[in-house]
Length: 429
Image (cartoon, rainbow, N blue to C red; front, side, top):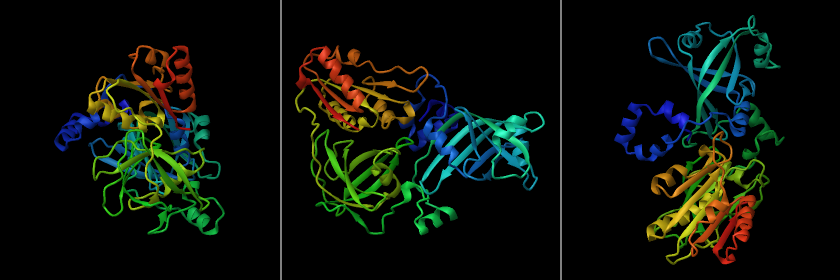
């Protein structure tokens, strides 16, 4: 969750409501730090360009909000740069409520839905109305090639903040084109919808019978899935660093197995949780999970295993996570804290909004979580030598993340003459 979003959305009245409902502490960490340079990332830009409609909110002179639907061919909402979007506005019922509201108050809110993918993006910005007489080149950029009705005006929006919403309660809906493509098998449906699960279908053939009992959207591309025993029995005992072999039904109908780290060590009767990063350019499993898993999805898999185990004694630890590599590292931090082991956690990602569990970790472990960002204007990048060098001589170093992070850690360890047994790592590529 970006700081710009909280500064607009979390007003004093919202703070008071969060206090009353018990969620204030969960969001407090999101309001810390310096304002970021708000820019749309590649994920947001691709998402906006794929939309064929959106909902737009404006405010009238009397303070009443007004919501209007805007639709057109996919891509009619243009991304002009990392902070600017816009669209061509055509003649409608000629009430001009949105137009009049924007003249009096240029603040605007957009809600962009992806019903088949069960995603939604909300944006806040400031709008400017433009016309062809004064800015013909800009109007030309906002026009859609296949829609030749005369443009009444252009609406240019400078992004002030944006945030992704949880997928919960979004009912999948499909356009006529998507339904026709699915029926004909022409392959024009998005990849994530090419293979849907049938009601009551079980994925996999292992002895451990699980059911998806909860889904949370942690970041725009990461979802957490809660898994419980189907018969209500206790789950197998696990230790920090364990992973679960997950059967996944791929778009071609085959079943593959992928390993996902457990994000915590559950107590008796509690649930397993895995976090899945949607990789558009991956082998298809993560996209298939995001597209097809729902509450009630049934899995039959093998019991958890652990090839990245946390030490059981009182030695200190340095935990280093890159991106989705936070999942086993989070599972290690919690028992270390509970046991009283000295430790610190270093977490690097593209930007705060992309880093799963960041808010919760900073809240639960104040002073122990150090963050690094690779795609923010003023972000500090991780210096592994500066992290590893001052560690106590008996500290164990745990690293999980992309191959580049692992190789950098190994290189630093060799340069510092760190005994090989002190560096433990798991590659998440």
